[in-house]
Image 1: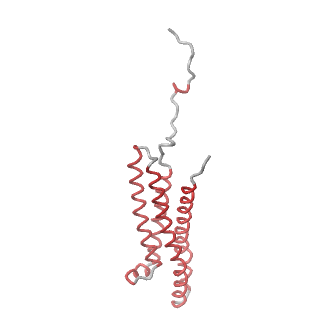
Image 2: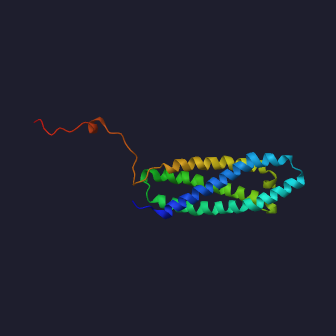
Length: 173
């Protein structure tokens, strides 16, 4: 048995980047954000800058890894899809990709410094919640896409009662 190491490594990249991005977003929304409410404004701003300056590197790395590995997986998978499933696969992948772009934008806006995106950072609780919901939808779509059959391994079908019965060697004439 020979492994397709580039495919395995890119799959790991994709999963680890998604785990990091989604897990970090859930942590910030449900643990960090409620916890900082007990701090003074100056303390909260100082902590926010410390977290932001570190987290932005993970966000940008996750976006890069997800895009590179996602496109690789997409184009690799296209060659294995039976014609009957290509429409479904493209539709689901398209929705997943568009939602991912929205997630990337919100995550970038929340971790960035652009003055034009300050209103998003001021409503961090709302936008983190939106990103958590969108990320859950993307993960669910990914789970469905993972089980779209490939040409190499067609879906199992049940035997008919005729196929299940042994064939007689003797013919009646």
